Image (cartoon, rainbow, N blue to C red; front, side, top):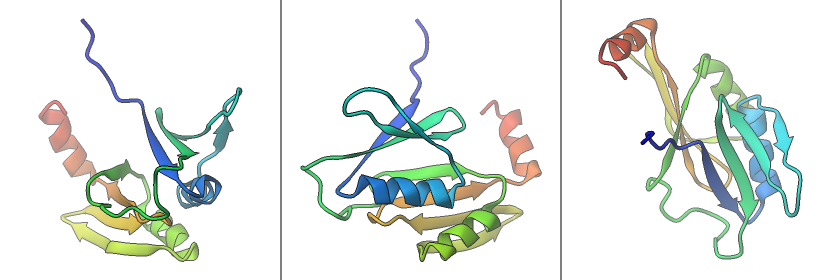
Length: 132
């Protein structure tokens, strides 16, 4: 039996186009439109797909944003912080250097938390040694 993998996340919104555009701009991603009805717009985070769609059983903001936090491994946290700032972004935790690794937690337009993680080469090597 193969090990199951998680390949995507469906993020629901009352304004999916606004949320999709925010993520695409903040992370400099191409929007892939899937064929079919109704179809989804996919954002490819290096093989992990974020699907943003509308639902009529969600409110305009997330009432419990800490319940699920999207961790995004990035190469240049400072550049992404700058793009989020340019979008008028809000921060739960501003960019913090932790022994050479950078962390920040942004709040998207729907109130969801997105943690940016830029691991230092040393921290990456330590994780590789542990087999993670």
